[in-house]
Length: 424
Ligand code: SDX
Image (tube, rainbow, N blue to C red):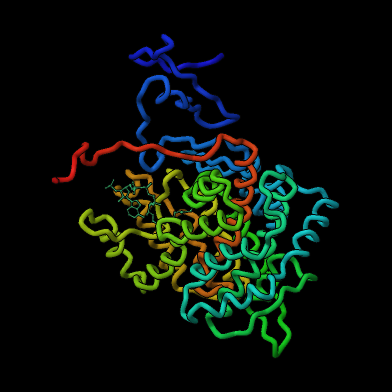
C-alpha cells in the first residue's frame, strides 16, 4: 500500500503530499525530489543525518541493531568464510563467485597488478617523509594520465575494466607508497601469490633475500580487507559518488575518495587510535583519558569510539577484536596497547556519558592494534583502509552509472548578505 506524507500547503498542481519510498529492508524515505520545484521549499539536512542520497543494492547498515550486510550477507559470515577477492566479486557483480568464477576473477585481477613503469617515476617526486596517503592520492589521480584506454564511462565494459584495474593496482601503489618513504627499492607484484600475500611481499620483501609470507598474517590482513571493503554511503564513498556524477573518470573519483578517507573522523581514525593508546601509555592513565573525552570544553575524543550510524556495537569491531586476540596469541605477541584498549572499552561502556550518547567502539578501535601486530607500520594504516575500500568505491561508482539521475547538486540555506551595491 503506497504511503504519503501530508503537507500543510498545497502545490501548484493542487497536491499536498509527498510519496514515501520503501526499500527492501531499513527505513522508508520521503521522496522530496519535487519539494523545491512544486512547493518552493528546500529540505535542510547538514551532515545528511536524515538523507538518503541514492538507491543502492550494495551494502546495508542497521546502526541501531549493529548489522552490516554486503549484498545481503552478514559481515560476520563473510569474514569467517570468504576471501577478500570473493567479497570484491560479490560487491562488484552482486553474487559470490562459484569455483570457476573465483579462479577467473583472481586471474583477471592478477593480470593487472603491475604499474606503468613511468608511474614509478612519479613516486620520486615526493619527499621521503611524505605521508603514504598523500602519495596514494597523487598516484591514483595521475593514473588517468596513463590509462587512456577504457575511459569511455558510457561503455559498461570499459567501466568494469577500469574498476578491476583499480582493485588490481591499489595494493602495488599502497606498498610502493610505503617502501618509497623508507628508501627501500620498489618491489614488483608476484602473480603466483594470492592478492593479500602479494601485498605483503611487496611491503616487506627485500631484493637481497626471499620473503616467506606468514599465513597467520596474510589471513588476518585478508579479514581486515573484507571488514573495510564497503560501508554504504560513508563520507569517502559519497565523495566518490558525487565526483562520479559529473562524469569524472574512475581514477579521479577514487583519488577524491582517498582524500576524504584520510580525515581523522573517518579512515584516519585507525592511525589516531594508536597515537591515542600510545599517549595514554599505561592502563592507570585510562580513567584520565575517559574524563578528558567527556569534558565539553576539551576537544579531545576517544578515537575509534562513536559512529554517525552505529548506535550499537560496530559488528566489524567485534570481529576485529577477536582476530586481534587470536593473532597476538598465535604470533606469541603481547601488546600492552591491547590491554589499554580493552580497559578503555570496559570503562567507557559503563560510563553514563558514552551510554547516553550510544558511543561504542567502531571498526577503527581495534584495527590499529591488529595491523601493528602483523607488522603494518602505523603510517600505512589508513592506506590499508583505502586499499580495501577501493573495492567498495568502484562498486558504488559502477552502480551510480546505472541509476543516472544526472549530476549531484545540493542546494543551501543562504544566510549571507542580501543584495547590495558597491559605493560609486
Ligand atoms: C569510520 O560513516 C562510516 O560508515 C564511516 C566508517 C566506514 O566504514 O566508512 O564506519 C569508518 O569513519 C568510523 C569512525 C572513525 N572515527 C573515529 O573513531 C573518530 C572519533 N569519533 C568521533 O569523531 C565521532 O564519533 C564520529 C565522527 C565518528 C561521529 O560523529 P557524530 O555522529 O557526528 O557524533 P557527534 O559529533 O554529533 O557527537 C555526538 C556526541 C557529542 O557530544 P554532545 O555534543 O552530545 O555533548 O557524542 C560525543 C560528541 O562530543 N562524541 C564523542 C565521541 N564521538 C562523539 N565524545 C568522545 N569521544 C568520541 N569518540
